[in-house]
Image 1 (cartoon, rainbow over the protein chains, first blue to last red):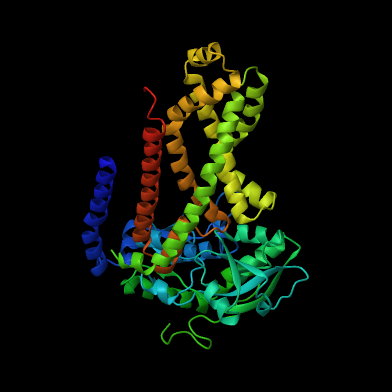
Image 2 (cartoon, chains in turn orange, blue; image 1 turned 90 degrees about the horizontal axis):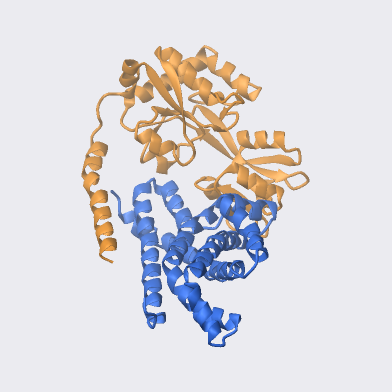
Length: 275
Length: 213
């Protein structure tokens, strides 16, 4: 009994002691931009997905590849440094960004208001959409999946709230990974999976009885960086637009998605004045 | 530190705790019953009972628990709660079977021999002389197994059961205050473990108070 009390006291001390330091670190910046740090160390550590083809995955030889990886490599080239890939999963991408394990997350993260409280986002560098993945023969209209049909969704995905806007009575089963949701779809435990279109297309390619339904929402994808770092964020925003202007972006996009992008960088009509 | 989120999300944590307790409260008696039965069967005379029980215990102890969970859920197609409870019961009944068998072996043979010399049948000796001593002996390792069941009930989040660890992830995803959420959940798991320890200690003291040891 005494040892349990001691343990709880020790845990409280361990928890409260560093909080003072952490609060200070969050209140003030450490005032050297990530941009300068990267130039100094000569390495750009990019957080990319290892589990989301074609945005970011690991090829047969174990090398990280994908659209995000190529964008990161292009950034490194323009900075004149080496690129180093670090995996960021849905759960770890923000903590790893905040603790410095990488300098920018170039994955499939959407700039939600909640996320803006802890990180900053660049302009959207990619536009994805939320679609439904269904079995062949079922309706491709997202509105058709209210009860008693069940929908699989990944924990932490904001698709839940967006889908509830079109069907407030929807029933969800929550899984940890898309692969589990798709397995449940195959087993008829659920009737639809809420999923990014780019992931959905990949699953439908591998499993011939699955069909990608219609989109229910357009999803901007931004690059996440640490807060209060205008120099780094502005550099990324400008570089994305310069890559658009000189055709590099379209080349990388066509390489991974097989077509030209259906969106425009920075705004639907033009780049930022001065870009 | 933003400890207020623990209060904000108290409903989610409460629901998660209830689910975890429900999983544990079915898995603990289930695995105890199955495990003790298997352990007693394995201690019967002859080589056959022991080998038969080993045929079950060996794969259960050597396969990772998540592999079994996915087998029951994705391969056999059971629903989430039955798959989770079945996994926990089968996994822990194997360890409890081994613990029971060791407990039976650790009671001196003279006990059973003396009982038989007094005219009891083997079954009577087993039930009235051997088993009570075995339960007292295996009480501490059983306590660890039960606490382990509570901890490992978190695997059910992989198949969609919204228990305590799942709720931590929900809070983390919604607010990014993962540290505060994890601390709260750790305290809750610790409290459940403490309750189990107190209960098992009380059982040992009062149910077997008449033993000389």
